[in-house]
Image (cartoon, rainbow, N blue to C red; front, side):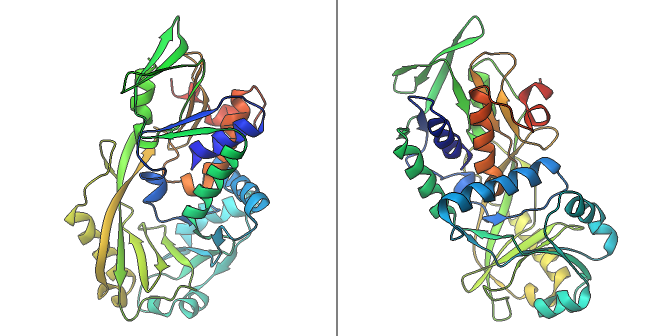
Length: 351
């Protein structure tokens, strides 16, 4: 998501000869295609809220509103204290929201009546992203501006001389001469940086997703629910729900295997929310990787050690919400334009 967005923005800003190298045979196989596709316009992070709002603006401007099924997102807690920081962030950053108590929460999601949740922030502008639509649109817009996209091309080396990028070598031995490389490799970003002599401490974390079916699950029109005081979330998906225990286990880049322990954790967390959820049937489960920097904020912009290396990494599960704006930010920084988040999200804070 972020890599395609940056390629589109670079070409639209007039940068010639933009080339996207994708190691896999298809775009979006890893984090961009294996996540819950929730657009979350509010977090405690000021930077994430800003990028989310800008991503919405960019996507609405090109795609209208069809890219998002805006049934809303509920951030919920067993008590008001669990939402204090989020309420403060919503007011400070002017994020449209409604404060719900137990009556409103239980009216909208009756299955929660027997559980502990009593407080929530309802975000009407949140919802579920049509990931395929957005990825396809970004690809079309990039190619319309002359961007070349090559799939199945794995990077073997990033050649440098005197701490300046000179070329990229692929695993088939072919060499691409270039002075600028954008590292937008998700969980593989740390490995790619090391190839250029610019190591970055980016940790891929495994998280599970489970598709559940049952007779008492919420319908598609219900909002996604994210419990913040004991993290777990679920959202309607077809005839069931898509749920996650919000687990985080360090993992090597790639397609991670699933763990029975994560499914047990999810079952316990959902049972705590509502006895109805405890009887749901597992239809399918999988895992994906969310890549984090030490401060859990994105890394966007030039590397201070190797001239020509630019980072677009560490989005940490926010790629669907913030990726398009992150790509725009990278493009502006690469051609020397200012950006309000440059200092706070730049790579030099970590090296």
